[in-house]
Image 1 (cartoon, protein in one colour):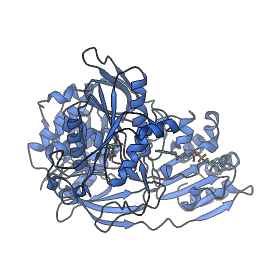
Image 2 (cartoon, rainbow over the protein chains, first blue to last red; image 1 turned 180 degrees about the vertical axis):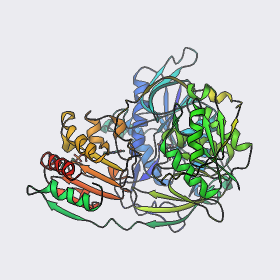
Image 3 (cartoon, chains in turn blue, orange; image 1 turned 90 degrees about the horizontal axis):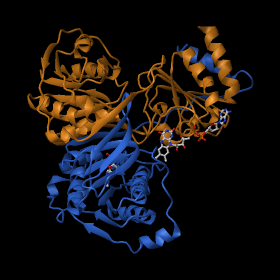
Image 4 (tube, chains in turn red, orange; image 1 turned 45 degrees about the vertical axis):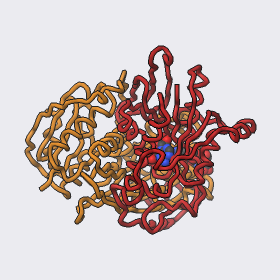
Length: 264
Length: 319
Ligand SMILES: Cc1cc2nc3c(=O)[nH]c(=O)nc-3n(C[C@H](O)[C@H](O)[C@H](O)COP(=O)(O)OP(=O)(O)OC[C@H]3O[C@@H](n4cnc5c(N)ncnc54)[C@H](O)[C@@H]3O)c2cc1C
Ligand SMILES: Nc1ncnc2c1ncn2[C@@H]1O[C@H](COP(=O)(O)O)[C@@H](O)[C@H]1O
């Protein structure tokens, strides 16, 4: 079967992130990397294959030139090949547009299972996997803390998992094809080995633009976004308050502060 | 006035607090109409009316409980499509965000997630969001279709505005997509007497410094003295010291209480992403260089096992 893993190239969360004048994310002044939460998606895809499911793993990213780095890192962890959707007209695309591009690229590549991270570490909306399920017309099996794929090859295949729902822990399942997303509780991702890094250099990364996917340039990009940022203001850093050393009275001093603030 | 659809977040008919906040915000935009999916609408209608719902759409269909997300999408999209709502408000939970996302695709409408405030504007609702670990405040609005907005808990204080809602039972024509993902079982989380993390005015959280599940009572006792919810860092949760449903941060719950007490927590960016919008922040940490101290209104450099019991005793004395 075919597994497509969606990975995003994002500004480093530990850097000083900000906005451009047009309200889009500044991707220049902070180094970017493969979103840490997508490493869990890669890990689970590799584990599914290691569990004995025969599958080809394709990584997919929508992003600028440098986003190729994210694909290289993913390929160094394992998997077979990658698709990089890159087009000047994509800049400023919102989640709705991104999901449109991803869905077209996934249909184009063919798929039985799409694996996503739970959220991108920059926009952090956690909505693209649900949008992909909607656009591809397949079940969504999302926010999984645990995932298993069974019965592939015997006329279908089923994906099962555990989801921490709003008020309960849920066991959910669906037939393939399906879109899943996995959380950071599915287990630590592996580090690329030296051998893996060398092997990755020989794996194919196909570049595609909007034309290749049959998407009109006015369907995506900042001007096609269905919401706009009016203002983005840096919050003044929190004024640092008093910090006292505990010399035996720390708890009493803290209580006095809380009482003065009427919390007690 | 346009109807503002509010998707009701409930557990077997018990309306959860974020919905009351949504109804309060909806009144700024138009006429609130609640959309109640599943069982227990009879009991919920009075509460919804008390917070200003002029209408309650009820979809009492088993699909809503038996399948994940998609039946709610069908229901909400059908109800929205039957009128011209001014906006759709949904609570920013995992389920809520995913329902909103798919409705946005289906109705070809703009989506804004995790708003911390919503106001009426000349071109429809204007939202405020707190992004990049709360280092930026962003104002935005939807430019296409029906604005679909997910709102974080504690974005508003629920205010009563009693109304007697008209109740309309809706029969939804579910799509084949609705029954794609079966919910095989549901294990409700253990009920505790403490307030829920997202709803609490005060949250007391413990981190790696607590050093063991057997020590978490130190956090719990102070929380109880303050009437607070208990939170935990990912380090404490990963170590198995406290349940994951209490994790605060980027991949846990995002809280915005009046007071946040960080105990034995260093203040990593991913933790800050979940608590930085708290009104008042205090911390106890034995390392004076811990980054959490950059955020605090008051901090104590010291051993939490000395400071916390003293704090608890002093709170109880002052009460
Ligand atoms: C993709 C991703 C997502 C993440 N999501 C989250 C998230 O949602 N939430 C989250 O919390 N983290 C998250 N993390 C992890 C985060 O980066 C930190 O590792 C974590 O927050 C550290 O937890 P901590 O502060 O409890 O532990 P530490 O960083 O180890 O800090 C422990 C602190 O306790 C203090 N201490 C020790 N003993 C005592 C004592 N006796 N008295 C007083 N102080 C003491 C120490 O001085 C230290 O500052 C995420 C990481 C990644 C990569
Ligand atoms: N530009 C992108 N390229 C590839 N995958 C993406 C992209 N944006 C989002 N995704 C996938 O969707 C998940 C959730 O993203 P988001 O909804 O933006 O938080 C991510 O973890 C990725 O798996």
